[in-house]
Image 1 (cartoon, rainbow, N blue to C red):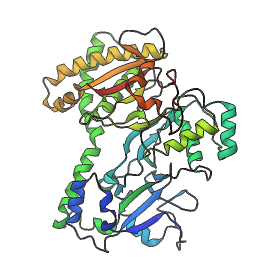
Image 2 (cartoon, helix red, strand yellow; image 1 turned 60 degrees about the vertical axis):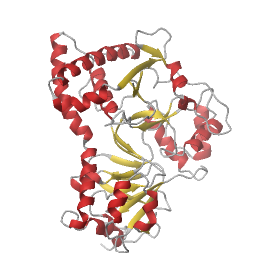
Image 3 (cartoon, rainbow, N blue to C red; image 1 turned 180 degrees about the vertical axis):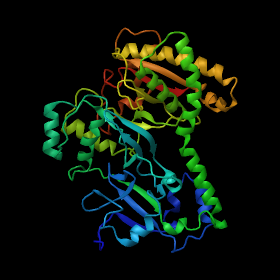
Length: 442
């Protein structure tokens, strides 16, 4: 079938000299590419994605249509042949984030979003697909795991959003459904804060002879090293499963049968502490979304009262930097569930107390196991520097649990307001903070 051309794909043909100065956080990659032939025979495509646009879905790469804002599969007959040939060398071509917008890699489950990674810069797209079969994950422009702490279920406020921004998404108690409303607002013509995620995709000529050309050996090694880093979650999971096997025997011996929700939460928190999976932080930059514009809509149009519109976004924790803490909530789970819960769920406060006890037991067993297993030393080295603090919104709390009121005292990002707006109080009784864990460096 003859291909019908799309004349307005949001793509710009560039070359290395045009984008080099944007790659400020990849000095090694810049040095490697500087040594390669990068004349006009080696184009790079700058692709601009609107907020929430699908970049990769069901194993297929997508490109944005500038006119409609929607994305089109690379396999679509309307994609021009030259673009197809330039970008179809793998399921997802190698992409360098320009730094003006982030992307999230995730899988939507029945009642939650499992976030595998959140990238805001560097060469991080297409690494896995270059060396292996495509994954079942979706990649979108901006943060998919984006939600507000105060409730946004007020009927009159929602009616005003429908009238001004044509919102059609139904209200839902699931916080992850807020993103669908955010998407409609941000991409509406009346939303006045432009946002896009620019990605520089390497084209087919850059990959020719990658494994055999001596001149490209350094680039090939760089990509392999990055691919190894991207397998961190899988590799650490195998190692931690060894500890968990021993830990399970200890629990069985002591006749302890923890709720599977608590077990899954503990495992997930370990991966967050390792930096292998993201948790959440209060929104702090424009890479996740056009934050100020979105908050103004909820302050002015929705008329949110009386709390600060604290917006949560995904973020990885790193023990090697002086990064701010990240947060995880038992009430807003994002883990991959291992099995159905075998008993009725406790209250959030009881679950939090159970988690504290189980975490203490786990760390004790991990220390014991580490002493006889050198393969676990790097994991222990990280976990020994991580601090877990637990919060709940109730007044009378068990030992080891702090009041959620304290969260903005130590992290002012929870009270962020757009410029020229008066400060507001913190919604400490939100669903997220009613059973919240803070992960920070000791």
